[in-house]
Image 1: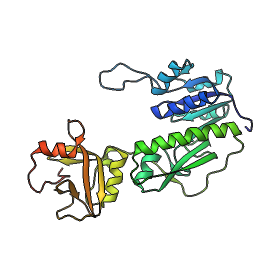
Image 2: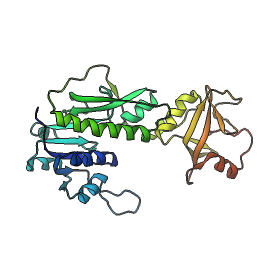
Image 3: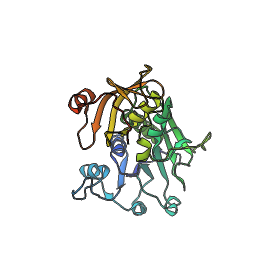
Image 4: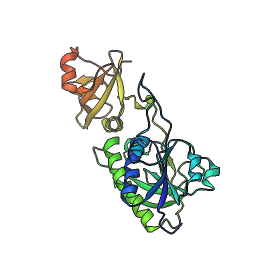
Length: 293
């Protein structure tokens, strides 16, 4: 497709998909159908509620379906996929052209967790690709890409926000200019597997910088007094403090190299709070150690 498409189907589910849907409408593209995930319970005991994309689509008076096959029943030029979260049948891809917005510089970090994996790896740059949807995840050719710097203190949330902003601009400019022919992905293929809870457990024998990266992707945890203890905000320092890895000295924890200064924490069944506030109420003994099982 070389001409700029005007009537689109939008396929997405979570909150990060919403800005793309809004931007397309604001940029003059007509969305003839929105496909999104099924309504589901968002919390314990709650009634099923719509996905963020469905909620906003209804507010915008756009037609919504949960069946991706329905795109064939509407006159559209192209389907735009942003974090749909479900499999799209290969047979449908053969009949309806689809493009996808992916948050990495492909082929590095194919898969569901490219932002978190880039931060964990200590990458200095990430980016956004507008790509064709292929018969396997994230293997299609790339129509356009935009690099985004990863800043030293970036978290999953701050980096995601900048990638969304860059991605919205890239998507619209790519559509405005006409898709043209995609470029095959070249370079080392690296997979961004989903982060599982076990990976978020802090190993205090690692250097402080690596632990800090884990904290910055969100949900990093250790144990304290036999209970799970989350660290939401911290800062790596080069200061070497006496004590075994995991030992708390003041507001810093000894690691394999350097130390980690704690800023915001959360003890089990408690709300997040400043480390100093937690420490005041914790009645700590000397030589406290995190990661005690």
